[in-house]
Length: 417
Image (cartoon, rainbow, N blue to C red; front, side, top):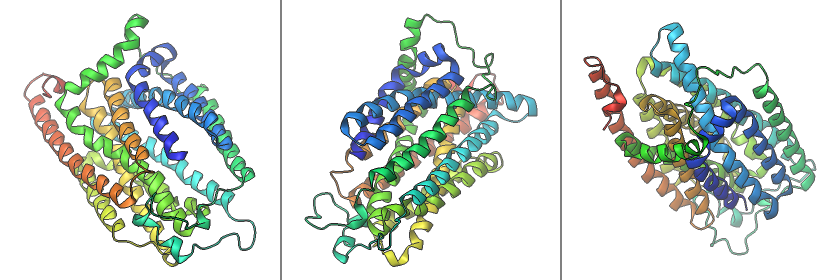
């Protein structure tokens, strides 16, 4: 049910990316879009507590619908704030955008840290003997050898579903935190930036399809086409971490209650990397971070095809999660910043970003229950290699455009093709 509903969620998100963000932003403005979108997430959290198809499917569709306007509004908001900031301190817009996205994703991943602590605390076995190690037969199907159609009658106690009361305790905590977020966003503490984010006064009928047309037209840019593979990889790697790493590796080997603990380094390192990379990019540029992300992810994926998870070597799960947090912090921060700097129409650009990233997640969740983990790893490696090549070409194009602007007054986006 989990991976299927994730596919439904991201499928609705892709459709929403094409039609809703600009219309909802026009009607509600950026601040209210961000606030009200969280209500959809609260409903989805409640549906997870019930855990039946009748609630999960509608809730997944709702979250998919509100997620696209939420992320488009957030990214557009940060880009505009960064532009305003760089005028005040006299810095380049590229550096300011990277800094602001770095700060955002630092706090975004802090939520992962708190979520990991909450889940591990709530799911921890309360009775003696509640933490049962898997049998050697069950352990043989953990890690890259996990196949949905090869386990036969082998059962693994680590994969048993927690009690309903335990699930509702965790869901209730998450819903309470999300409700507090809604109150804060809609409060006067958050500047609506009405002047900076003033939209063109188009008729609503035109606005309803303007982002769809803009998103499709945006694909005519060579840079956008070249960025599709690395953007899809971002979605693929997030889905792989959420589904395969958490289930096939951690849960299968050391137990579901340790998922939060084992992924805690992911959130910590991710938050640190998001914050630091956003600030360091103005000194060393983007490409060193992309290169580091590529080399580490490539190394992790190759290692996973050779590693046999062992409950006696639990520390390896923490190390790999930390390395994964490092690269995810790079992908999330720098790809977002790259879209903000490379394209003038930020809403169409970020709509494309969210659409292609979501498509990567859809594909990963859709085939999760049908192919073996080792095959999924090889798919990841292939897309990563193609993605880094496409990104490198885009970086060369941006460098040439930047040199051109030093001698002409032509805008970069007018010469991007």
